[in-house]
Length: 396
Image 1 (cartoon, rainbow, N blue to C red):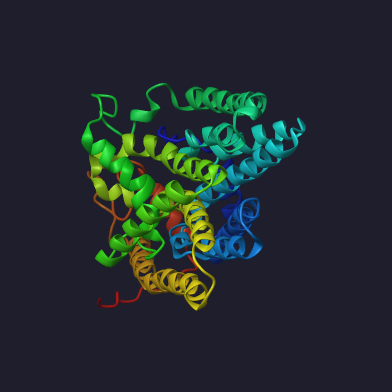
Image 2: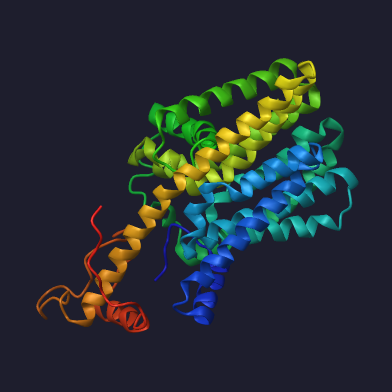
């Protein structure tokens, strides 16, 4: 059944292909997600190396690749869509940087292909891909204007191909299929608050706590890190550092414009969804790294200068590790609910009388997204015939 809100044939093809190969061996699917997460961190490291020394780039790249925020993606096999989307975006970004440096036109088809694959893996980057020509315009400066137009054309071609496929597949009313009243009126202050939190505060908070139930101190540290990073870059950064900081803020802001339009009516908590922060952490760590380079240049060499980044990194890593049990508990509850539901089907306990509606009532999924018939549910039960026998749910 089409999911009209999104069109992601590449990631769905990959997911269903892997499910066909590995069947009920879910651990294999999660391992592949972990490898994709590692590839994402490696590509981000390669990009950071273009702007920082090797050690800061390596530390930030490792933190990004191993951040507990990725637990929100690696423990759900279907979220290969986000991992593929972000990997292809970073590939296009790397090619854009090399094109900015070399003006080699052979890179332009690669940028188009990377953008198109990103869009058909997950539609989160619909606006984010326009950060690529802006990278040329902002970081490169006025003298790179012809390259800006070349990258803009490369992105536009991929965007046009995606748009034609999307509207042919889902129709012109697709965006409103799961977001009722999305275009009913102009968004107001609530939308702007949602956008600001999602684009800037949420990823800085994720630096210190890798789960979406944040303690107050994580919000405080995140807000302080945001303010200090932007202030340092604006006050003492050179022209190139300011350009890079401006682009990082732009890269974070663009995708959340669309996310907030679709989600702000559901509450501000939607701004802190982890799978969005995985993307905006890129711009956040770029801002943090730039601020550190400036601070290191301003401070006198000494013990305090050596201990400061170590202490900050220790707090960040500790926050990621301490938040892991929250993810384990959440996904454990979801897995038990799924298993219990399907195993009860085998004994006919959950099957309604013939007069009852033939659709399965929502249990642990989004009722507006997934509609199963009882026949489909029983087919899933037969597929899961090798699961362990039903055991009592542990008390929380």
